[in-house]
Length: 525
Image (cartoon, rainbow, N blue to C red; front, side, top):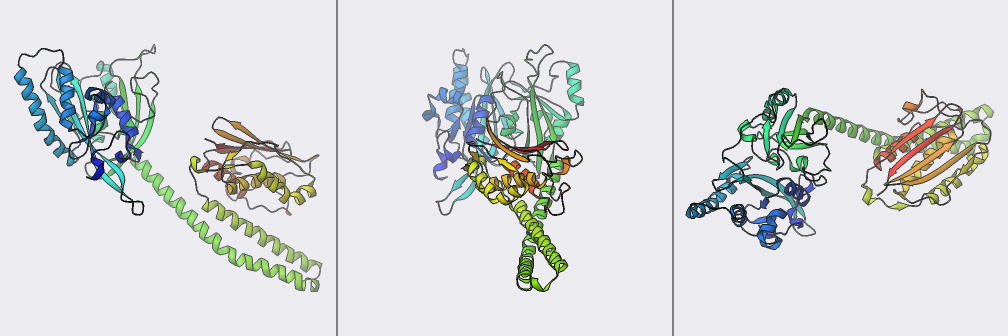
């Protein structure tokens, strides 16, 4: 299977599992279960947890070795220092292990959910295995394609006491068992090594398994790895562990896809001390219906945005023609009209210009795309602000408004065009609704914060009536204004969309007659 059969840990050939780098997920899995081996379909080791690397004598001694070799080392280490009456029996057990591993790989290749068996060594050694699918890039630079590759995860652990599987005994006492049995959510209890020690009826039904198939099996064989051992979490035994909630996609045995909401929490006593048993409770809800609803809404939103884009684009051509002929009529035949006729002509031009601005804003609103923070350039906001001030000079002078800009603002991680639109709309909105006030003023400030840039645009104008505040960031909503001032009601919704697409938010504080303060927070990494 080309070079994939012998990558080193962390090699890009491990690819992605559920869209996440496989190495990150496997490192988390190794923290949870400790002794973990990942093989390709030939049974050659492509990744091993640190615990098994140490047993093998280092990373180079574990990678590209047969699965049986690492399993034998684990068995030998578990038996070290223990007397055994029948050494020949131990040898036979290891021979049986080698023979059964081929059977395990064959069963895994058919994507059987989980394969388990216990070696009757002293102590007993349990092997649990399941298949996952990794995606790697194949081909040269011109014809790269993503290929699905099966990987087989093998988890080893020592078993204390009897080698027979545990049953679903109450985790602590009858009261706790009764509570978990009657809990409306599917509920599992896992021990400190990541194996299921308890499952209620709801969990059995939701996961499409049996109680015997769940009890004493690794939790990661039933739920996606990232839902249980995400890379950014410490091991479950860590004091830094906090409850988390994830929505993950799973494929049922029937072939249908389901979405599950998974949350897990450490169980503590009333005085805050950690309980040794049950350890961790995992609650699971079927979120498939909610996900389907979200997907339908996203499709409708996409269809609406496409429709708005098409209509706005198609409207601009006749609008431009109408405005052109209006100006031509005014220039060449305006003297033949009386004052009333020229007033009508100016109103036609003004209405056409306002509609042209609206279609332009709608196009911008429907086509604005989101980019990852790491892809956004650093932009100097002062350069943009000075440009806007020059463009608005006539309007500022007409209303006697002082526009105060920061002298040395920090750089902002944002493309130039959306940053220009953000400032232009906020300052334009402040001019629009300044009203007749003494010493009208607009003050722009930009501050740094950990992982953020904070933009504040403050004015001392008319302010905003509390009844209008909930809707001012919605498209086509605009505060009352003078008839001679045009507003499409889209500007602030564009500001909101730009902020959200840059990982931030926008808010406003205002009271009638006391001006308004708009605050925009943008992510900055």
